[in-house]
Image (cartoon, rainbow, N blue to C red):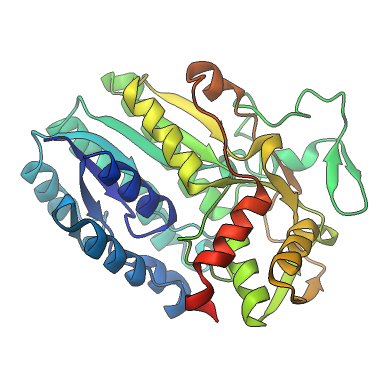
Length: 354
């Protein structure tokens, strides 16, 4: 039996990974204790997604309501399935800048200590398994804000002749920059994943994502950009745009495209890799452009206001250069644009949000 162990299995990327691997005949062991609700409130609960997975996949999906910081409980899970675990996908996290600043101890222990617990259990119990970590572009801090940007009508853009015009690659420094406390805890986890690969010769990878999105996102004010924006547009809720004139740019990768990248890595793994992964030039938008897309799809006007101050450590312009991953895995391609993603979020959440 081939088992995939997935943390954060009821969240956006985790649940996509559950579906992806269950559909391909794997048994999935999921770990998720719905801490997203504790972080962001009832609207952010992932219980609906957990229940959907249990109902849809039955015996192929085994759920454990466990905190990833609980070393003893995590060890019991690893030991139970030790002979069959071939892949660990670690997506569980505290994902918000603002929340981390208010609860730095919880943020760090979830993001850094929780990752250490999983890595050490992998090393001790199933060292030949592939370990994939869902990292973030926030490991680069606010260094991208030093790029020579040009203000356009609806977005900030980078000079056409700049080496990063097609996206930011893995050579950007993660030092001498303001990360936010969230970014700091993810840096710690990211470096741990690399070091376990190099020091113990384990097959590990940190995927440094841009905006990760899709219809299974429990979007909320502090996390889940496109999902929450569409929810507000559909339901008539007020939305706030923070800083940079609403022209800040994000690349957006659909959860399926990201999990498919994980699958390609799993089939031909490498040691201690890092990859910038996102929508790249194929799928990106500014805040103002995203609002226009949502209004066109819903045929409603969004009630939004502008707040001059930006979030600490927030990026003005981020587009991922995914060429390193595509060079290693040339059969992988992006398949969803921003309008594709928003249309799917709209169509699959009508009954939940209206």
